Image (cartoon, rainbow, N blue to C red; front, side, top):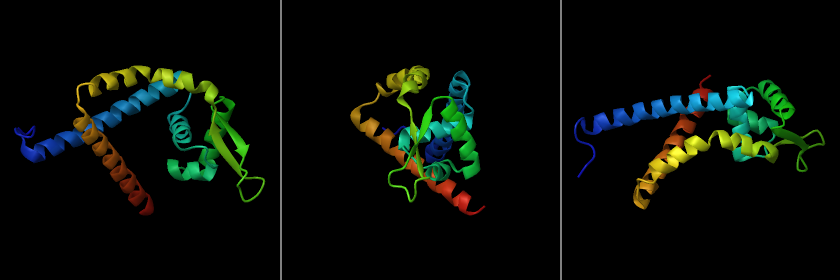
Length: 160
């Protein structure tokens, strides 16, 4: 039996798009609340998460991933370093001795992750209702949707 009946495929697609927008808004609100609790600006938290996910990174690589001007990233890194979230270290593979890498400091991980514990537990409860095949489908959808978003972002950035 198909789950797509009342509004047909078009209705299902429209509903999924609306749900993705609602999810984006809710996650944005959650991240803003986490940032407020940690005394981080939204953009600071975004950059910290990029360093956590992809680091250590050079400041220029972080700038590209975040879609921010390098001077903006410098200010963000200054704030994150003052707050004890990141360290700038000499890049042993850099072109010269001025090259640095930005690394997230483990000392504050528990504080950050603790603020997401409620959301993580709620997602775990939602996912418990799905079997392995359904989880694989959801994971594939999210991976492919994330890639589509990355491609759309890059296209818009090229058109500036």
